[in-house]
Length: 163
Image (cartoon, rainbow, N blue to C red; front, side, top):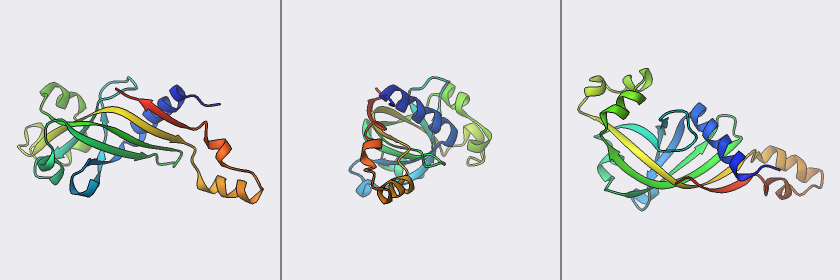
């Protein structure tokens, strides 16, 4: 039986590895999300989750103080899925930018860390729903064999507090 702590640990490990989340503002642009690369600060399995963006994007333009956000995640192996809810804020902390800066981020900003378009965004995650091993193919096979797949998945979904 998988417990909530283990499910949360698997989520942070997968996010640290795969890094792409779909990020959007609640109630803005009909909840439109866009792919963003998540940056985690340090080795601990907790937020905040950071994203580098351009000040010219709609996301940054629409972001108001304390904006509610949702970020969704699917691991590359499709064995971890998550919907993360929290508060999104603009962050200009130079020390954080220096710690998180890497060659992949640098490829997007010609002026480097001093690029006038550079904006760091901080997601303070409060809660998440996380699904582990939610393979529809496995569920389909179980249905063919007369097995109810819902029984296997009830212990593989967690509502976790991230704040």
